[in-house]
Image (cartoon, rainbow, N blue to C red; front, side):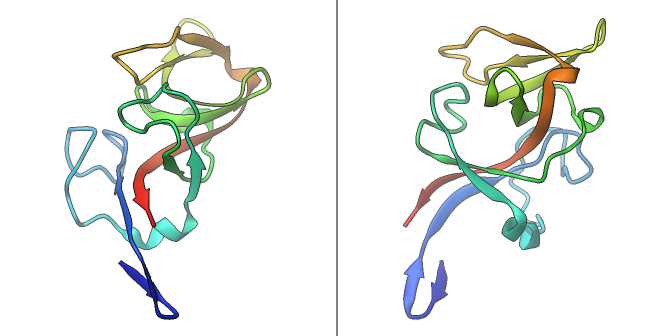
Length: 139
């Protein structure tokens, strides 16, 4: 809990890193390691989820935490990100590079009710914001 000027605020969520990233603590996508450097949390932005594309990781109305945008070359297959494109505005999807041509395949993280994959030419991608965590509750 955080205390500020006599009131208390509780935030419940999870911070995660992409499997294989330089900050990853294991070979699994999710890590319960508490050595994560939380000093970066003040630099993250919270974005509200609309829809069920990444359910059950984050549900409609919850907030995901994002980092600063990264170039396409720093993306890793399977990473979750908000992708800003000329055609689709901003969408939350898993990224997979298509090695045969200059495109990426964006897939839903929702395995119960998956959405149709999207193929986007990398020249139409404006920004990629890696997901850094999910806020489940804040009051």
